[in-house]
Amino acid sequence: MDEMLVCAYETSSLLALLRSQAIESSIKCFELECTPSDKEVDGKEKVNHVTIFEQLGLHEFLQQTSEFADLMLFTAGLEGYAKPLIDKIAVHKRFVSRHYRPLTVTTLVHFISAWSTREHVKDLSCLTKDFSRIVTVDNHPFSFLLEPWNGISCVTFSATQGGDDELSRCSFLPHKFFFQSILMRVSGCTRKTLH
Image (tube, rainbow, N blue to C red; front, side, top):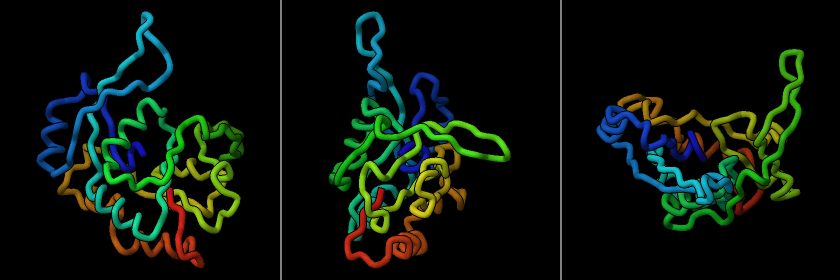
């Protein structure tokens, strides 16, 4: 979700220049209050104020993809942050289900002759046993570490990219090649599940 559908910045530390450059580049933004954790500060629920920048082509991507796939949100984000954010950007209720950080797992990975731990890995087996009908689209390759054949990587989105940059216009991939990749990956089914 973060760095793919949207990018978020703490409102109090957001540079005015960044906001104005993003808006000049046609990147939509809005402010959001969220409770990112269950922790309280002085007996009160902690509330964060964040500024959210939407990926260029976000709504078109969700609309077009939902025409041939069931969209499921599977994010390492905490529900107190992710739920109000998705409520705001997915006003047409395109996600058939939502899954948050508690469903991610920690796993060991062997990388360059050393073992390391990776947290918040998406484990698709908690959603389905039929891996021929599901793909993960994410900007972070460790997100689909457990089911690499079901992962489609995309470019990280940042509001600093600017609308004139070819990468920012293409990074969300709302174009034919992306959809063909998904269809090839999950071929053989009439209705697919995509998250």
